Image (cartoon, rainbow, N blue to C red; front, side, top):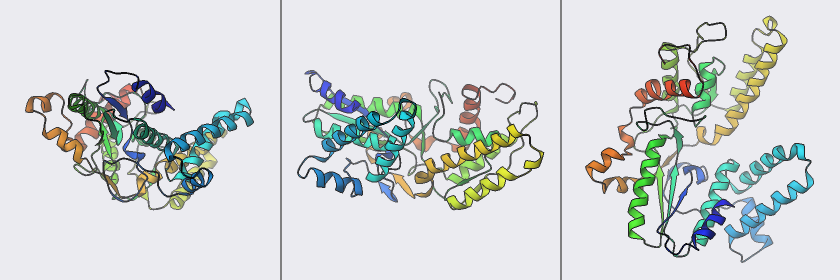
Length: 355
């Protein structure tokens, strides 16, 4: 509903120069191959066919928004207060999958884009679609970050010695980009289209998967390199010894691995330790399910529009507001910048002198 209300407000602003919408590259339904910077359409799906059959001839994005809003209201009416949050999550996930999206977040972002496109009329629109956003590369200082982002749950549980494996295609690309580069693309796009004032929709992917791909197996190797040289410290003040992460080719193999891990040396554990291990097993299964669409699909996000934006900038502008992902040294960024900053500012570690 946010984009709907914002665009409604924007159409009342007679001196409006630009409407900027921050989306995500993952609004694109997961599929293999190169994904272009193009407008979205509802894919053929069970949910789409159901909508058409109920109201033939009506515009799909508007109908979709009305229908989802009604389902939320009906769900709230029939659920007790103590279970509403859980039921809403389940409903969001169910509806997203019916329409072809992997989760409620990407589904909601996709609806937002389609609603903006149908409402905008002659308003100039810029849509920024970043891939997985991580800590800064340079500004305000290298590694700045707040909260857990794309790859950070892996960092957290791997560094603690809890996560010893994960399901994925080992040669798949993990598409991440530093947040300061996302900001710089946004500023550059605002300047370019705010000045031209052409009634169009302009989409920019901010991603690294084509120009500077980071292979999942290599990323896990860099995690190992970091924590081997600068281990986390456990509650007893001892360094946590980590091993190289195992990569499993299927969810079934990973679940079997978790079960083996959960039952390993159980006889030497007290009840609270056993409960903690079982709890992490469920957390790991949930993580695997969330990341499954991104860990097993061979996709790359095209950045043709973003590259053209970079090309028209002056050398001084590129120096001050650069977003050239080919300049990222992944080994340096992950081992020496991102993980140390994440451990210091998010995990609040103070024990290791190397941080």
